Structure formats: C-alpha cells, structure tokens
Amino acid sequence: MRCAMKNSKVDFKEILKWKNLKKYLIEYGRLALIVFIITSSFVQGSRVPTPSMETTIMTGDFLLVNKLAYDLTTPRNIPFTNIALPFTQVLKWSDPKRGDIVVFEFPGYRDEIKNATIENYVKRCVAVSGDTVEVHNKVLFVNGKEAPIPMYAQYVRNYTLPENFVDNETFPKGIPQNGDNYSPLVIPKKGDVIKLTSSNFEQWKTFIDREFERDVVSFRDGKVFVDGKETGEYKVRDDYYFMMGDNRDISLDCRFWGFVPRRNVIGKPMIAYWSWDSNIPTANIFELLASIRFNRIGKIVY
Image 1 (tube, rainbow, N blue to C red):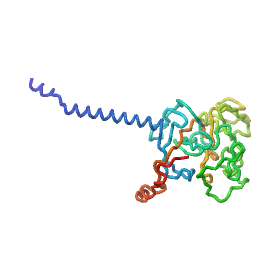
Image 2 (image 1 turned 90 degrees about the vertical axis):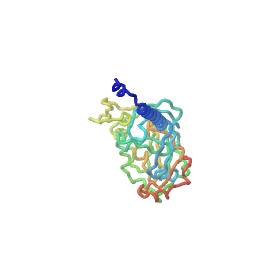
Image 3 (image 1 turned 30 degrees about the vertical axis):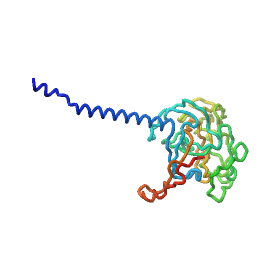
Image 4 (image 1 turned 60 degrees about the vertical axis):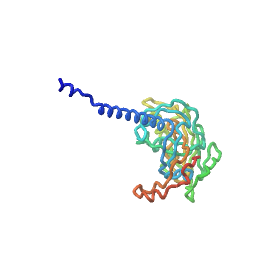
C-alpha cells in the first residue's frame, strides 16, 4: 500500500517545467506569427546587390519596402525564404505611376517563362500600360515626349551606341536595336488585343507564355496556336509596366528582359535603414564596418 502511494507521487516540478515550456512555445509562436504577418503583408527589408539604380540607390543599401503602397495581398512567399506561395490581391487602391521607384518580382530573362528563383528587383517605372516608350541616343521618350531625368541618375559611358549596332539580347526578340537606341514599343494593358502573325510570333511568344505561366504558344504549318487552339489574336490578361534603372548605361532592365506585369509589383522602397560596401567580403569584418555609409542611413528613397 505504501509502495503504491510512493509510485503515484506527483512531481510538481516536472509539471511546472512543462507548463513553462508550453507557455514559452505559445509566446514564441505568437511572435513568429506577428513577424510573418508584418513581413509578408506590410513591410519587408530588401538588400540592393547591383549598381543599376546608382546614385539614387547605392550597392549595399538595405531598404525598407512599403508593401501597402499599392495594394494588400496574401503572402507571396514564406518569410526569409525563396519558397513561393499562391497569393491573391485582397484590396487595391493604386497602381505604379511614371517616376515611381518600384520593388517587384523579377519576371525572368527575355526567353524565360519564369525565373528559376524568387528575386526582387528595384527599378524606376518610366512607362505604364498604354504608353509608348522609345530611346534615341540615350534619351528616353514616353508618348513622344522627352522624359525627365531623375535627380540622381547617371550615365557612366562617355559614348553612345550607334543606331545600326544590333544588340541581340534586347527585348522583344528579333528587333534590330540596342539599349541606347531602342525602337518604339507600346506597353500592353489589360484587354488589349494583339494580332499574331508569322512575322511577330517570336516577339510575343514568351509574353503570352508568361501570362499562362507555361509554354502554350506554338507555330505550326504557318499558323499560330495558343493553348492548343489556332488563333490570329490574343487578349492581354494583365496591365504592364516598363522599368529602367537610373544608372542607364549599365542597367539590365525592361529593355533586355521585357515588361513587368501588375501581379509582380510588390511595393515601394521608403528609406535606407543600413548601407555599406557589399563588395567587401564578410570575412574582412573590420574593413566592412569601416565602409558603413552613415550619411545614407535613414535616407528617404525617391
């Protein structure tokens, strides 16, 4: 009888330990949920790895991005990872305007339907749906008018590529042009009807494939097929934007990989909350710390 009583003795210290553990797990879970909601829906940090927006934004700037600048969406990816999530737009109150600096999901290189990984880019919106964009001797024109040059924009080359120089890497594919002399191009808008022919098939194939997020366009026996159906036209499903870097001579932007769809727009950068020379290896910690740009910390991005 005594033995049974002894074995059934309750260890209150063990219970208290497990209760505390449960309490901590709940608190940490709540904190993780709050962080998830904030980073996925409201604001996020973004590091700038290239000089394409210099000197408006510097390589090594860390930006705070306002994800509510244009709309509210469900999470696009698991925070702090490149794992994509199906997302939907919950509310929309505005769209990117000419002159806005925009953070967006990179749609992929010119001949890619989708980029292999999730990458966020930051560029300036120079043209919106329905606009016509053109570059002549490095000068940008939108709807036939010379576009204003951003305050901190720069050109690092002291020469201009001649008009007869053909850069085969530009978008759309097959157009004889280059980044300094870019042929007039209309930015598609939702509802536009594109006439498809044997002569422009290559120019529009990847664009249409991207709207379906898979390979749907083919050309057989002199006919164009979209999603298995013969057709001579295509109705655009989304609005599009033309983004360019402020560092025009070295920026790889829409001139080279195509339009940015509205669904890829994430938000607007607000401030640089940190900045240093990211070209310095982290192993050289003292040199890296010495490169901190205190004059850029807290700088508003515009």
